[in-house]
Amino acid sequence: MNKKPVAILISGRGSNMSALIEATRDRDYPVEIVGVISNRADAKGLGIAAAAGIETKVIAPKDHPGKEALDAALDEALRAMGAEIVCLAGYMRLLTPGFVEKWAGRIINIHPSLLPLFKGLETHRRAIEAGMRVHGCTVHFVTAEMDDGPIIAQAVVPVLPADGEDDLTRRVLAVEHQLYPLALKLVAEGKARMTGGRTVFSGSFNGSGSLVAPIAGEEAFDIESLARMTP
Ligand code: GAR
Image (tube, rainbow, N blue to C red; front, side, top):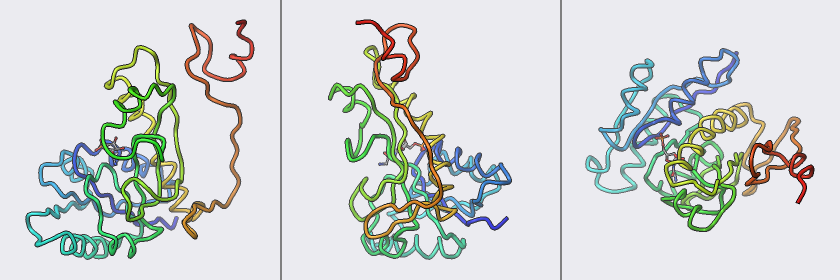
């Protein structure tokens, strides 16, 4: 099988990186992880990647005179690894427009909200404060704007009345780990492409029904059971 060489950029824990590495254990998954790069030497994910036998590298701001120089080093390292697709997985630096331009359509990010809602940080706290009844995560093509760019895939979770920030963080993170491998597969197979500022899909897709939240008591979490509920 012809596998796409993919590099992952991280800044910390690397749980999404781990989910992508895990996905590649399936021999039908169309991706090979060729390297993991962090902007922080203390990123926990670096040890996890190394233990999985993946090349790791630190490209830190303090070793480069400015953002352009850092991103030039990043570009060089990615090319040396042979990467054809780049996955941002908790990479907490804004990339320069020049770098993004070079990798346009070949760089994707996961963000813990239903974009375009809640760009930036503390998305779970802000979703609770806004009174959202659903929340989730998004995988999108990267453009020069932060947490922007054509959406590839989203996953939705309910926000329950008793939820605190930690509950919601856990619930969203669990679906992030499912969504990112699915979205990367679509991009690696050429079934989701960035064209003219949009994501264009090929192949067949299905999905029906709706999510409604909250559903009281023991009712199942779908629109059919909501319809059966008596007021
Ligand atoms: C994840 O929740 C990811 O969606 C988020 O950082 C976390 C990294 O966790 N990314 C962003 O907020 C990007 N704007 P991880 O290191 O365990 O994957």
